[in-house]
Image (cartoon, rainbow, N blue to C red):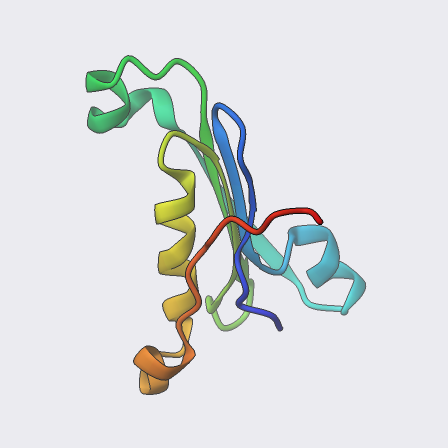
Length: 103
């Protein structure tokens, strides 16, 4: 599974890391998902953010985090945390979002 974050620089930001629910199901992994609408988040309210959500995908049996999708203000920063899944080698394995030009 890739822990390279994928980011779309829009407003609100869209960021993903790991597997989507569909990708996990295609790999015969039973998943459970958790969604949170960001309009109830304190920081979102302070920044007057109106749209946004966070979706986490877990292995149903082990409850291991398989992937995450963020469509919200500062979604990129939240997505970076998803790369910390392997805490044993965190500093060597973490990959942060960076814009790359389409040349």
